[in-house]
Length: 518
Image (cartoon, rainbow, N blue to C red; front, side, top):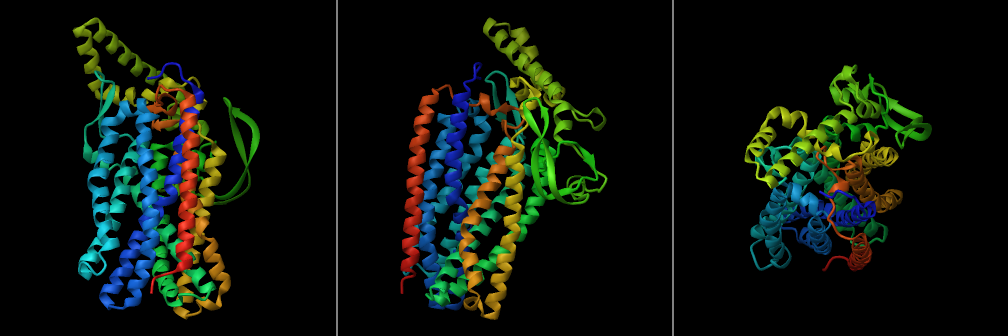
């Protein structure tokens, strides 16, 4: 672990990883959703034999290929940053975190990449059914890739299925099943991939609307809108359902994040869910963190308690409860967690000292301590708190999370309306007569990307200051390198990723203007 933390290094490393992740996620959700839309369209082509469906499929497949290639490039860089910028993290949990990433590379990515070649170049070279199977396998492979990456990410938010080895100071996987079936992983995967389905559906509806506005490829556009709108509506409803389930799990495993999402400072029973609200500085402080008042609040009475506890009178802890503790509710204070974490860290230090001195008797006793369930449950689980100086450091940026969450949810309901209107106008054969809707659909494309990025902002900024919940803060996870080196690569990546994004948008726009091949 780094004893003397360079905050400049920490902040630049965080910034570089955030930059890479944000750019990478501009490409991933379209890949996840568009792959299935392609599979649906090609299935219709194979079943009907209608060449128009083949033309439609090949057009969207071209856009898929452009996006897929650039997304892979940014994803590779993202994985390398764990070793270059976050070596302490990689050392501490690499035995666990590396396993799902390895499976993603060996199984899912190779499945996906193998059949991509058949999908793009196999037209008229393999049978229709084999080509269709290849397209479905690409879609399944792309989403399996997301599964294993999200399993790794979910473990960071709810570390399970591991034991700590004091001899190496590393966490080692004890139960692969627990890691994969982590409730956070299941809900994160279902919520994330369905949000990608929504984004891709908005993309297809929006681009198809442009064709109708320009009175071009109207048959392709109408068919694409209907397929994407049906897929998008189902996916939007699933996003809402999985998001609700995910929020309940977050309330249990990351209660500070959940309280920040609601800007809930004072715990309460019969807690209402805030639909819209404006935060202002109350003048009160928790350490150096501002406490915000809620102005212009619109809320649904008791809904927050029902969502988190299953009953209207259920108690939802606020940020003050979680920082200062609430013995009546069985909530430990952060100060108490810091003491327990410090004790666990001291036991590790004593073990390392005994090992250096060759004191095998003390080593055996201390090693046995790590295997005791009492020590694991009551002390080591708070290991990461030993690195904090003040209890208030566990509080993330409340305004960022509060507003990001509400904009994301609001856009989600907007997309449901968009898909309903698209299906309605498609069935009525009046899409071309409602140009206001076509323009709305076109300008909804960037809103879909905004909603997707905001979801990750809530997820990742909400769990700050943790890189591994309760076990390791971000500040001690960085590599022991110079901040200047990270700054240099930050700007290099910023230029590179921006150039890639501009290139993709330019190629996409050019290809859309050209339209499908006849």
